[in-house]
Length: 261
Image (tube, rainbow, N blue to C red):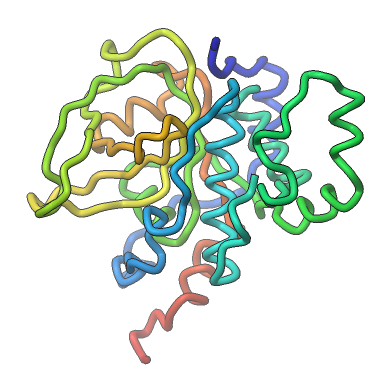
C-alpha cells in the first residue's frame, strides 16, 4: 500500500480558499470548556475500532470525524458512517458521507460502473444529511483543545510510521504516545483523526488520535501535534471539521456559558 498522496497545488488552493472564516479562539470566551469532557462526549467510548482492509485510511479517518460531529449534533450515532486529505475535506463539505450500514467498507470496487450502481440516489441523499458545516486549517494546540471538546475533530495526513513509547496516561491506562514527529517518522503517507483532549495524571494535555489499524489509536503530545500540523514537516494537510461554523454557538448550545443550570 502506498498510503495517501499529497494534494496538488490546485486542489489545495481550491480547498483552502473555500474554508470557513473562523477567528482564533480566545480561551476567555470558553471558560467552562473542560465541562464538556464527559464520558458521553468522549469518542473513545463510541467510535468503533477500525481495521482498514484496502488502502482507505483517508476514508476511515474522515468518516470517523464525521461520526463525532453527528454524535455531538444529534446526541446519537447513526451506526458508524462510512486520495488526499484536502479531497476528503472537500467531499465531506460538498457531499457528506453515508452510514456504513448503507454503504459498507467491504463494498469495494475499482470498476466505476459498479460503483455508480452502488452509489444510488438514496445513498447520495443520506450522505447529504451528514455534510460538515465547514473546515478551517488546524490551529494551535491550545485552540485545538477547545475545538475537540466542542466536537470538532481534526482530519489530517502525516508520514507513517511514527515513533512511539508506552506511557501511563491515567491510573490503569497505558498507551502509545508520539512525542516527536520531525526526523522520527517513516516515508509513507497515512491519514488519522485527532478527536479528543485528555489530561494525564501528570497534568499534561495529550490528544487521542483514532487510527484504522485495529490498534485502539494513540496519543500525541503538544510538540508532536505542532510539528504534524506544520506543512513544512507534513505536506498532506490538517483541517478542523466544523460541526457548526460558529464555535461560540456550539459552546452556548451545549450548556449555559453563564454557569446557570
